[in-house]
Image 1: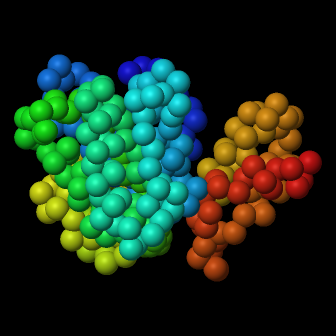
Image 2: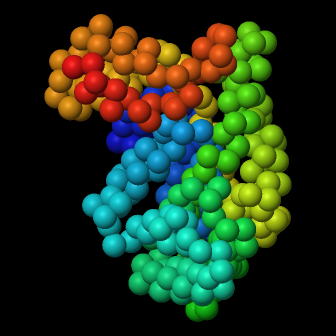
Image 3: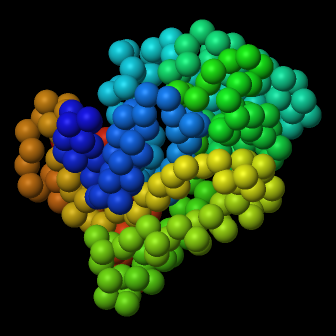
Length: 273
C-alpha cells in the first residue's frame, strides 16, 4: 500500500480528502481474505479535479498492465450504451459481460465513466453483483472492485466549497461530513443521473462516496509544473504563472477556483513555450 500512497500523495494535486478516502477503502478491502461484498466506490467532482486520474492510478497499482489488464473493464455510456432505445439489449449484455468476467477472475475491476450520462435504469442490472449475497449465478464475485465516476454533484461540491471559503473555512479543513449528505442528494435524487431511483442507492451498496474539490490557483500551478516535468521541459516560473493565469476561474469577482480544474493545462503549455 505504501507505493500507492506515495504516488497519490505526489501526483494527485489538492485532493487530500479523496486520497485518504481511497487509500483507507482499498487498504481495508485488500486486507480481507474473504470480503463480505465487493468494494464499490463512487467518485464525484467537476471536470479536471482528478477523478479519472486517481482511478487509473489505483488500477495501475492493483493490476499489472493497469487499464490494459484483461481483468480491468471500462465502460463509457457514450461509447458502450449510446442509444436509449436499446436499453434492454444493453442491460442483457452488461449483465453477461460482468458475469462472464467474474467467472474468469474474481479479482476484477469495473470502471463506469460519466455516470451522469448513463441512461437511468441501466446500471441496476449490476445490482446483484454489488451486494453481500454469497453466490450469484454460481459465481463467487466478492473480490471485485467497482468504481463509478461522475461530474454529478460537482457543481454542488464547488458551491459548498465556495460557501465554506467565504465563511473562512479553507478547502483543506473541509470534511466528508460537510459534503456527503448533500452530494448524495444531488447525485441520487437527480432524474438526469444514471443512479436515479437506483436500487444501488436504496440498498446502500456504495461503500465510499469520494468527493473531489475544486482546485485553486496554486494547485493549477502544481499541475503545470508536473506536466512540464512529464514532458521533459524546463520549469520556468514565468511560464508556470502564465499557464495558470490563462485558465478560467470562478466566481466571476474573486476568481478563487479553476473552472476546468487541471484539464486544459497541457494544451496551454504548448501555447506559451
